[in-house]
Length: 178
Picture 1 (cartoon, rainbow, N blue to C red):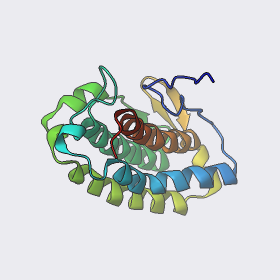
Picture 2: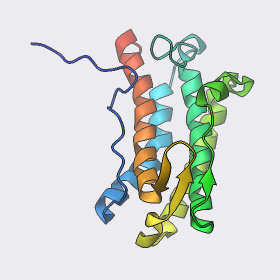
Picture 3: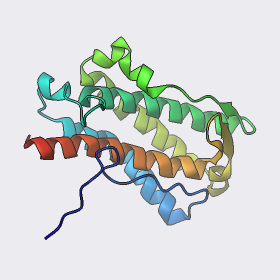
Picture 4: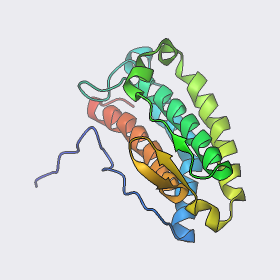
């Protein structure tokens, strides 16, 4: 039986961005965002420092860098949501994720970012739960991607958490780590 090789860069596939979500889709993506910190915590549970310092793929970030990247990225997203809710089509700047991953704070113990994600996601979900359906149609202007709706960002960040957690779980599976 032939098996299809998983692209280690995109273990769950590339994101499917929706400019408009229906209520059920939005609720599911918000559930995924809410559960992300616990899912990531479970994925990294029990990993040694050596394992945390292992790249998830050749030329890729280490597990430690992935965890810290998620905190960096989700902080940026949370702030972008707030900007889109309080400003008319704010312009947001992209940042160099690879350069951020090289900064010294990416060498910290992962608990620092896991705790940050727990708290950040509680606030993020409280914010999302408070919005009216029409609020998700608000937009921001991304310096590289152009105009993006909040619905699209909800879909993207639901995928983003699953995507990077899968980097960890696929590495563990491929290495036989428990």
